[in-house]
Image (cartoon, rainbow, N blue to C red; front, side):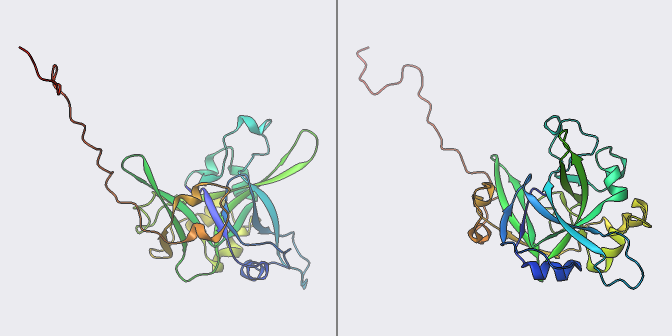
Length: 256
């Protein structure tokens, strides 16, 4: 599961990381939630030999994929994630897996660890060496009945690496820079050809920082939501003991 991300790098840093042309200015985003716009990079149209134009393009997409065949998005669940192990078999994702694989640049993501007593401890997970990381994504364009189009996207997930397993059993798929071209190449690379890229990140790739529950609210968008805190205790807080009174037991003196 990947339900919140953050993008803190500048447009120039993001463009250089993904091999894109110039990007429009955008501010740091500390708490990006589903249905909000996210930046995705796709393979560009085929270029003539000798062209100096970038072979990748970027666009903003709604986080929450809407399959092209959808009649009414309100009738669909919010598809923010796709399981990499089965995406090619699912009607909602198989077309995008073949034709519109994407890279989603992030500075990290948030995950919540379930604790006893119906409690959850949020964690901010960022690359241990800093900088950006590219998550494997899928992009789909949905046409409204009125004719306008909406670009939408989902993040692919896989089983969690051993060091993250104590927080959650799933994590987003990370695509390394050396594999960007192969992942985005939907012309010559079938989904089976890139299946080896959909694997957990190396252990210790992500630093795990416990943060406060400020991140739980979408309205909180400042850097303070990433401040390290003491994690909640693993054990559930003890319930106060209530002394039961025996029938007829009271503080008044008895005559008989």
